[in-house]
Length: 419
Image (cartoon, rainbow, N blue to C red; front, side):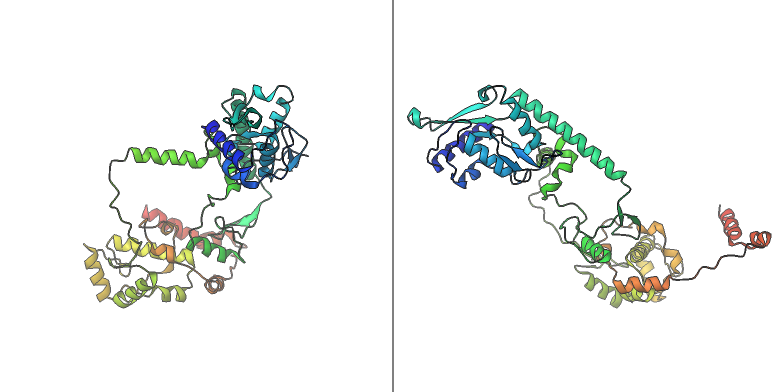
């Protein structure tokens, strides 16, 4: 397949460049057209190039020309125009620099025809107008072994880099979704790579835009993905595509008439759905006298506290239990009637009842309402003021009396009674 592609590309090259001739190592025309790059489908970026210490450039396989590591395309263009050599599947070479250095040495030891497939273009023309191109590909056992070894070496380097990052103690930063502090700092979105002025703005951006992942189209990350080294000669996109094909081949259902429905947010107390959270807030306030925005403002709730409150209410309603009086009913309809008549919907329990770790986990996995919650700078500031409570240490001069009156005794007694 690689030979056929190279043959067709070389034939088109001959037509575009007017039959430029020259053997390996020949000078050729220095002003050959750039159209040579299109039919040969050269890679857009090096991908996986390793810079050797003290060697910021890559030499040509046949001459003394050197090109920067980041300008791999120019080197490939030079070797095609000046030396008539084509490297097949160059995108899949894990370490292009070491690959070139290896063959640069081997071509000084043996003729190029011992390694490369010879492609004769313009074969119907007179002999003096015919020309030869040379294809270097993994059909040659030595080339395939080299590519496999480079891929294994690159995988080893990537795994070592990952391990180094795991044990790196010089990094400093904080989590963008909670208040946990770490070594290091970053205010750049992982997906769109935009930089933001503070952590809260970045957090809201990534949550609302669903940018909580690496951009798969950024080729700079390809060399860090282990999947690129799992199967020789295939990129991660090809591996994933094969997995999808295998899944589709074994799928018996016909999905041709399937239609996607927009995700709707559901009311906390009934089955009412709304396409926007604004409409849902209006419904809950009008139908159930429950104003979530007002509760958020009055209690100074941040994003995570809103999540816990929503999950708490969802769980109580799911269990048909009134959170105002703790009475359990036979159905959700009975519960809703009771809470509306007794006006228990707005009778929220104390904060310590619902502000617990267990309500971090959503009651319903597809709860779209959770994705629309947000906090602001003013909310965070008011929360910090509310939580700025002075702590006074206990007097330890009378240790025995302290042990008798300590609140820990009451907690232990309560725990024993409950168990």
